[in-house]
Image 1 (tube, one colour):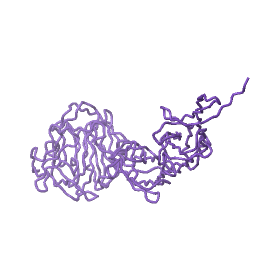
Image 2 (tube, rainbow, N blue to C red):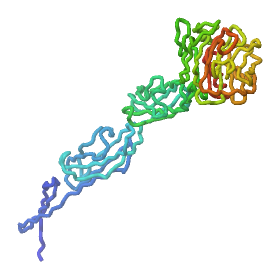
Image 3 (cartoon, rainbow, N blue to C red):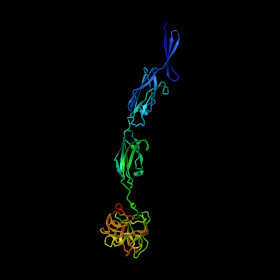
Image 4 (tube, one colour):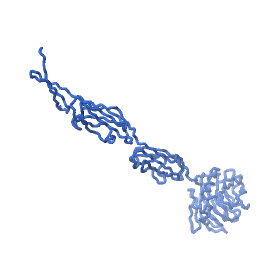
Length: 488
């Protein structure tokens, strides 16, 4: 068999898909031609499967094709800002079928919201040409995150106190935002805001929050201070909690007394003619208003008491009585009960024994006394009326000229005289309260209730009528209230 001899000629042809094809032509010695097609190979391999920010990955590209210029594009979810050269595409040249691509990640001090990666596609004929090779995915570790710190000047504040928050960051300066998601709300703060912004300079910024002493009983609350980026509704990047102690409680009020029926204050509810007090409005909400002109009993006139703008120990108001009285003839006690308490806050300045200072009566009858505070005919004493056969119970110790909270309280069996929280006397009580409406007298004793007509000069700061037996706990609260309001 004779041997065959061929000569080979190679040529490159770009096929319809844009991929180079190598065609080898073999020529027989007898002049026949035979074509054998051989496609070139392409591969790109990363030096590692994962890198951290600040590190480098090198891609090695190999091909059996002829050397030349190739193009690369990053199809991963990283972006130009993640790379030290800011590039997402480029070109390289192969030599002896080999070329390299180097990508270096920036340490950007940003906390990316999701994990990122790089994937390099190589193209042979421009950036929009067909892909000839694709690398595996290289993951990027977000290790150069911005550090944040938020420190409160205290972990607990009282109402009217201030807490200062100091915020620091290793990231760029600029405007940051804050919000509060605690149980405190905008009305709890001196500036009435619950979110805002602040500037960070040289990596530091601060915000101060002052809590109002709002005199409301709310219980302890929290101030959850949150630092956010972008806006007051942006992502929370740091937070801390401060406890707010409810130290400015709602002030105690006589309205908290059990079944209060009449309440008269020297600084509220007055109708004046000059300095004369013509009417004194009931603050209990029951409409038991006092008037100074109900009727006249000789030798008393209908002269009303006087308003004294500086008559109490704290320099506030008093109502000054001198042979004057105020009444309401249809005082509504509410539901029938054997219990009743009469309270007078004030003092006598000129003594006249057996004067009615304040009292509730079933009617205009002197024999129908229910409960009163009067000047005793025993010098410098106080007494109550309403015991068995109207026998008074005298308080045997305190001078009447002393500013005091004086209380007469009774239930179905006994009554007590109390001054400044101390029980001075107790006696039996056999009288009943058959009606739910009666007569309230404040001031001098008119003849319709008792004989003779007597009066002292005295100052009243407050009068309270209760359809109940005032408790020791209520007396303690009343004493604190009187000390704060009237200086007693």
